[in-house]
Image 1 (cartoon, rainbow, N blue to C red):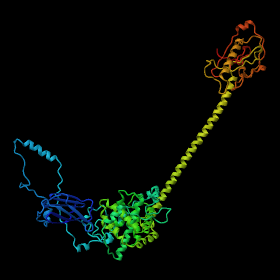
Image 2 (image 1 turned 60 degrees about the vertical axis):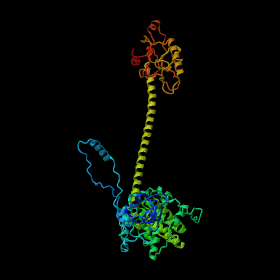
Image 3 (image 1 turned 30 degrees about the vertical axis):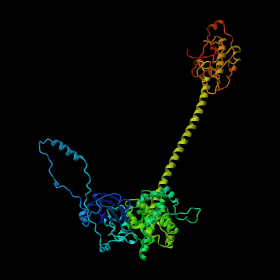
Image 4 (image 1 turned 120 degrees about the vertical axis):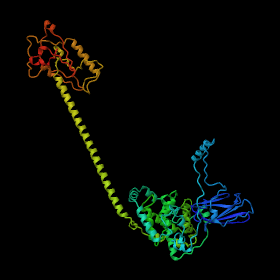
Length: 626
């Protein structure tokens, strides 16, 4: 903390203190008055005085602050009216901390005697005091403030509005390291500040960040479509008149009316620095869409080389190049389109007139005023600009719009190799797209191959199923033809066509063994019943062929293979009566030896009955094993 310069005076009833605290915020004055103790804190200044008399805070005290001179004046009533305070000119003694009124030595051995009754109690109390946190000692050492001589000030570098300030940062550099980037502004030459700024911009530039905003520009495009408050509506050809809020009017009344004697060269630098500040403000309004945030003070002072590096420009092109380099190096959104958009916005602001410029400056003043420690930039630049712009001629303000509109700023002007970087990024992007397309084609090819494989497998499965069904049909026909028993009827049994497909002997409610699409269950049951009734009427199977029975002479094809095929859903086929010879009725003795055989195959249903006398030696394999 810094000890400010101060003076004390008195009258019969009041003590007057004049404290010089330039470049401080008037809203953050802390006062402490208690008898002989007086303390004041105004960042970065702290003053503690030990007065020769007592003062009181009873409501009669008054305070004032001269912003132009940076002097804080306080009148405090004396506790005893008419008392004269001695030694008010002895400033060093007033700065000394309040001494002890006791005659005791500063260091004293307090160890009790051994064996004393209160030794244990005193030890416990001493341990408890050691455990307690020590209070901060506000009796810090203070040094007197000394004004710099004119010769020393002449040796210091100039900065601020019109280069009218010097020596400000000699004592405040530690406090304001977050405001400006110049390490030693009071001794740094303008050329050194410029080279330091360019080196810092080059080191801060991040190619990855820039390429990310270049190729992923959805948010950037939205910001470019934003219309700030100074931009006229599409239905209006001319901008709306500028209106100042009550807060703006109140702030303008607080400004000190002063005159500025600037030569031609200095005025030129002032105009260029104003363009630099307005460019930073226009960029801030666009990227935040008119809603200021806690980052707004940082954005404005970082984007402006005037505010951050105390830069003095010599041409409009230097201003644009400096702003462009900083706009693609520092803020959150780093896109060259935002740079050109901010230049157009600044041209619109100057074209609107000095009222629009003044409103922008008042808004900047408010942003810095509410931020610590950016408020120092108001004292160095913004406040003077707010007062000065009101006195310049309007035509000088609007004259700046034309060069801004005609100005051409290219990416190569920034000296950051943006074009080469974008070309390399485009190649990488193209390669990535080609790789993605190849991956997609491979995926499509694999998916189509899988589909063709599945379709071919399905077609092959369907063909195999159809072939298997046809084979099943053939097998069915063959198996039916190769049935083990053939029905051979006597009399009119062949004419009644008793060959009917029969299921395996199973319960009636069991699943049907017919191929899909055959007769329904009711018809099956009916056919079975008819066959059973007719079998009961006298169909017999002879175990041996009676003597004298002529042979059929069909040795080329077994009789059992001339069975009848049962088609799906078709009526039972008729027997070949031409292939079966009529035999005489058997005798009674032979009939006794005859019996009925039923062969139920689990695989197929048809039951064929033959007479044993029709079988020859080649047909023995058709009989079932008994």
